[in-house]
Image (cartoon, rainbow, N blue to C red; front, side, top):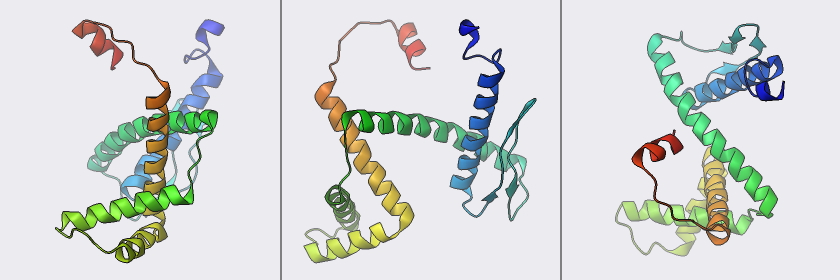
Length: 175
């Protein structure tokens, strides 16, 4: 049975896969429409479903948006799993100072977009604190810090081996 461990031949794998798909789809819906309330998303004999309470009826256009967001979320989810594992294994920690520095850099960038250079530090600090007071913005800032820490660790510890490969092999590797 080992050769079928990660295939639909294995009922436990199939159940886990479908259960995970239901949660990924639910998160894609929440990203698109935060007002949608989620209930349950079990796997069933022939697939999976998710009960939701929505202020609107889902249309075929909504389903296309969900499918596109599902693909993006799945890729993002893979990176989050890798980042989380690497941070744990490498002992990488996000400090409050790292988060504040990132928030200040983002605040400075936003001011610069409007042509406002050399903004006083107290204004940047106040704006950064406001950004961190918003849960969604704070989560994005923390994720950015985690990305930077993880990628910095990889740059420091990984080595790249140069190889010549065919275009066909490159396409196969990037599927």
